[in-house]
Length: 251
Image (tube, rainbow, N blue to C red):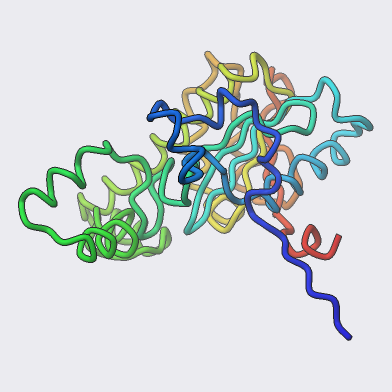
């Protein structure tokens, strides 16, 4: 017999405060349909929460605040206080939050209603929001950041816009996380884009000195795994740490 174990991407977020889980929709929607924020990338955020403490020599999670930025084809940011998720940018589904490779991220709830009134079907909406939005929808070029950067270098304005929108989203959610936590001991950039996107990291972290984030461009460019990419005197330490969702599943 082989044991079968389910590891849910939402599990790390199950202890989020009630006020962080709730949407301001009719109360009975939670009771009838389970409508609330669940958060995703739990294995990655959980790993980062533990690994960054090991890197920084912090033994216990109590009193340690970290902003985990999982940046990839699917992206989310999690505010972690004392090892507990205080909120994540993805909610009821992985559709919300940051602009993604082909998924929409944040969207006014009335946009789909408006489009359906204009004749768009539910199936068309689902396909557009899930498969033809994000990087590919904005740029019309690619879902891949590397190809977007190549197109931007050749003067493609829509590719540049897609990258600008992505970095803007990440930047504003880091600010939101700082407001939620009150302070941060570390910001960790991870995920496929986060681990490899030297230019994207620089665009996100530039001009954030007023929030206590001072990027060291040389350290960032070196792209060394598990290395600090902020300056020594940066009030908040910033690291690039490769995630390991697989080990969380094994554990």
